[in-house]
Every structure is written in structure tokens, then in C-alpha cells.
Length: 59
Image 1: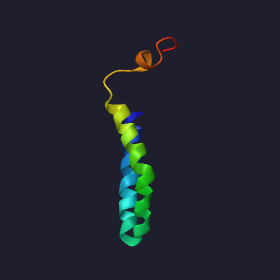
Image 2 (image 1 turned 60 degrees about the vertical axis):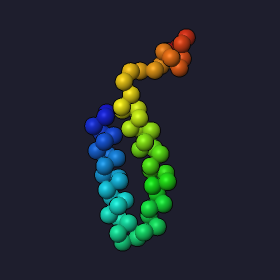
Image 3 (image 1 turned 90 degrees about the horizontal axis):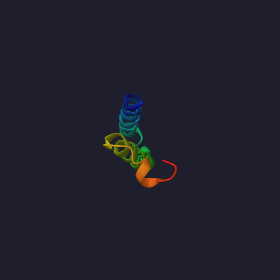
Image 4 (image 1 turned 180 degrees about the vertical axis):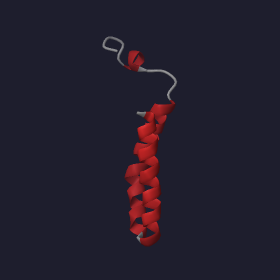
């Protein structure tokens, strides 16, 4: 799953950068893509599952 996230993110970011060479308004897409990428990266780099801390009765 991590590998898929990294591959899809890399392809999407590189694709947007290549398209931005020809059509600069596409850079506005990073307003949507950037935070999603950072949230996914934060999830990947998390050391342990926090389900028990967030949901002590259901985790």
C-alpha cells in the first residue's frame, strides 16, 4: 500500500510539473494535491497505530 501511494504521488506530481511547462494554471492543482500528499506522507511515516489513543473503547 505504501509503495502504491509513493508511486501514484510521484507520477501525479511529476505529471503536473510537466504539464505546467505548457499550461501554468495547472499549478493551482497543488492547492488540492499538496495537502493530500502531506497527509498521506504523515500517515506513512507514523511510528505506531494511534487507534487506541484516538478511540480507546473501539480501537
